[in-house]
Image 1: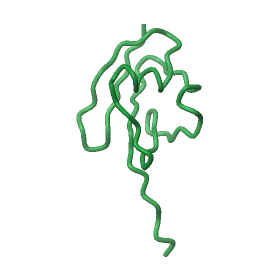
Image 2: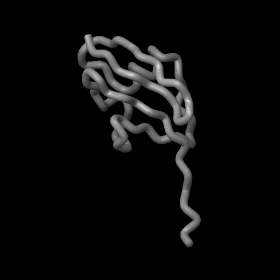
Image 3: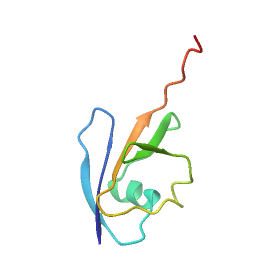
Image 4: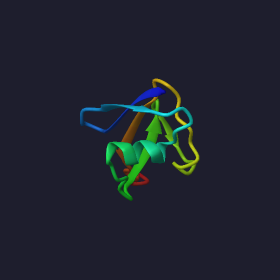
Amino acid sequence: MIHVHIGRLNSEAIGKSLENGSTISDLLREAKLNRKDSEVITVNSEEITDDPSDYELEDGDRVLLVRNVEGSGM
């Protein structure tokens, strides 16, 4: 088993226990969270650009859903 935390920016994270080999998609399902189109996923403060169903989590990971804000280009 692995233990990870998931939350949204400015919200309290919740802890979840998952089977070894679980992915971000598994965690989202277990936590009953839906990723909004405007959100990016970070794991331990690093943005994940891979498909969430391909990214395997490790014990202690902290997953955060963060609203993607485009720069103004100034």
